[in-house]
Amino acid sequence: MAVISRTRRKCCLRQFLAHVALFTWTALAFPSQFHLTPTTFARGFVLPLSSFAKNIFHRDGHRSFANNDVLEKPNQLRTGDSDTVPVLSTSTAPSYEKEIREFLASKSSDSSSLLKQFHVQGWRWHTKSLARDARRLRKLAMKTNTKNTESLKHACDYVVGFNMMGLHKIETNLFFPWMREKLTIGFPEKQKLSISFSSAMDGLETDRWAVAQLGQIISKKVLVACNTQASESRRSNAIFEIAEHSAELENLVQRMISTEDSLLVPSIGAIVPVREQKSFNNKVLRKLGLLDSRLHLVGMYETVWEDNDSQEKELFQQAIPGISRKMIPRWKKKLYQPKTFMME
Image (cartoon, rainbow, N blue to C red; front, side, top):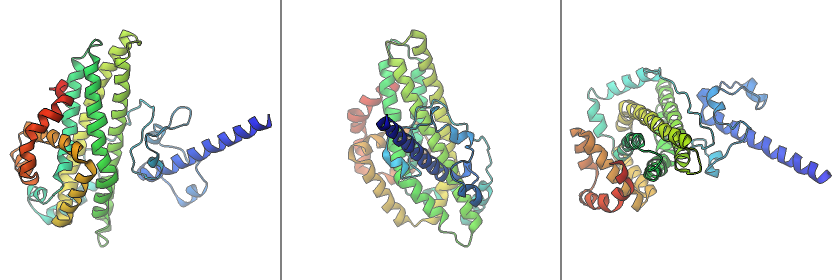
């Protein structure tokens, strides 16, 4: 009995420490969701959680992570078992927008010129390709029944397991920390502008976390849809929910694109020297890896040409080396289409 008692005490202690670590990490990752004061923080971890933070926990108080680095890196993506989609702000004009737009107006009267000064265009096109894939996944789900779910499973694996995860790997480990540093540290004489950039980044990272949550839910639903042991009605409902969540995913990613293209991308173009941007872009490409970067490049190309925006096409021609552009048809046939043909 004494051994069992000690085991239980150790188990409780581990659970308590895990909860403390998770709450600390949550508060640091999403400071805008918590109102910590020196007094309340000194009392320990007994603060009431916001509704947003509550969604992070399971009903039993536990949390599972796909990557142990989550607890060490506040901006890492989180995964769990909750099917709750975070309720996000629908404000169309955040308070930080005015300050940033005034800054951009002081740099150039033509926003397109600042876009051309941005030299990590692959990140923008990667994000746009995710929105496109979410739309294509929704269309596939709408015409899927319980007899042909295998194609839906392959499509979800590509959209969520490859495209989304590839984008988030870059954003989490490289791009967002770099962008936050460049936009918030370089204005000691303009504290209000730095705060505005920080708020914009907070909103973007919160949206990215919600995107990851939606991706996780979609991945779970497709397993239900493919489960031949489940009832017909349950499988049909799962397919319908995949279509529904894919539409939510597309809308959310489009909102992120709007914030990025109107506020953050031109600001980076105005602030960070071209040489430094290009050096960072090479670092991103190395992080993606040779094979993955080929697949992502084809997805970017398909997105840009489908949108048929002449300015984006011109930027693509300028940013992507000629040899790589010539290889796109081959990579599309050999690498891209075998993984995405079901969404065509």
